[in-house]
Amino acid sequence: MTRASRRFDFSDRDELLRDPGNAVVYLADFLETGDMELFQEALKDVALAQQGGLAALAEQAQLNRGSLHKALSRSGKPQIATINKMLGALGLRLTVTQARQPSKATKKPTTSASPA
Image (cartoon, rainbow, N blue to C red):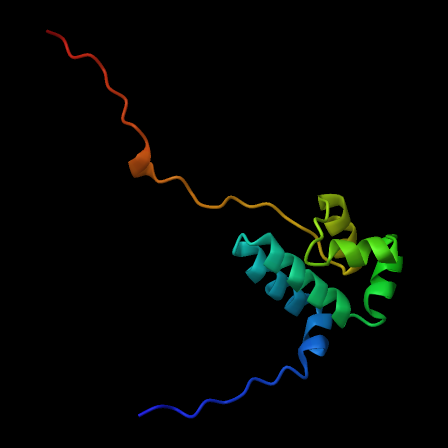
């Protein structure tokens, strides 16, 4: 027996992405995939959801609107400085954390010579 599927309502997406807490979760999920094109697309979603869209974000980030649009396009390759300015204008920032703790089991044991 199959469950009846329910369509997802995207009508509130922009409103949700205007909230910095929601934007953080949204962007972090895409960033964790390691797929920078997906992260770039997510960043564009967040930018477009803001009051005034890309034009307002470009002004707040002190970036040229055309350059911002190009950076967020599929062919764009935004520099880290551009991403930082965009995130700053959104009230966000990038942080670096350790990917995983090294396992104690993977450390090579120290050996000492035994007396003969």
